[in-house]
Image 1 (cartoon, one colour):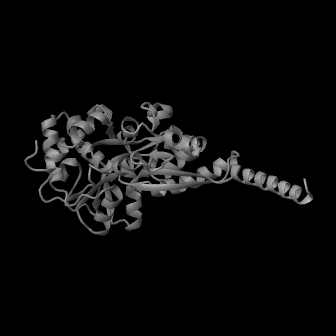
Image 2: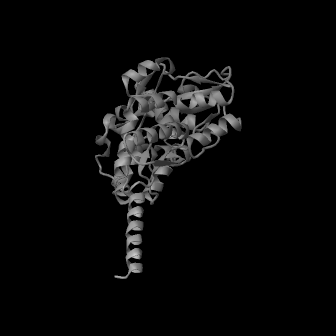
Image 3: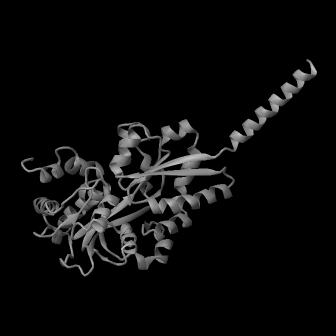
Length: 337
């Protein structure tokens, strides 16, 4: 081998080794596909996790976010959006990734505590300062002359929970399904515009000044009040629905991208004291009793029910109420049964 060839070979081996070393320590990138009103929470959470991950010896990590109406977001993942993790506000939007896309196992909810829901919220009613329409409960939103803003239940988990909160309040008070349907039909007749997600509904109510009330998650209320200098007040209904926020690793995507270890750690960190505290600071109800006790002043006690308790789970609720031709379609489209 000539001296020139030897130098060339040595240089090539050095470059190859350098490339491999750089590749081994290249930034990892995760994509979190989430629902409409979690932007601020995950912005803070992502920074905390990245610091934790590197402190534990992990490589530099970049976490990207995607937000929109929950059902629309889930559909995007089903249609090929390469999410590493999905963080939703209802289990059914993750279930379809198993049943229709085979992207995750059907028992995904059993892989983490609390059926893979690290935090929760409740559906409340936001009214204008002074509550001029005297709104105190779901039935008040169904009265003539009241205008209420709710995002579209066909595309938004926020809207779906609002619908179920009103329906379930009748059932929990001892009413019949017929009475619940009558209330919900009158309530949705008072909705002037259907936005695609919760953040869009907030804009309609708070910035466009449409509606007397906004049905939304408790976690949204402080953001709205802070931005608009106390122009709004929160009403806690007598009974409302507990909105549980499940999460899942997208197995097919992380195995293809080689990001499983980071993605699993990202979700597990949601149950850490730090993750639970960040959730509480963003007005999401933590699962940790210790953290909840520290923030008890921020989370008033309220009578709640779960979707499983009143509706038999999300699968049954969707089939009866929100699938094409279901009760929701019937009440918003005259003549449909």
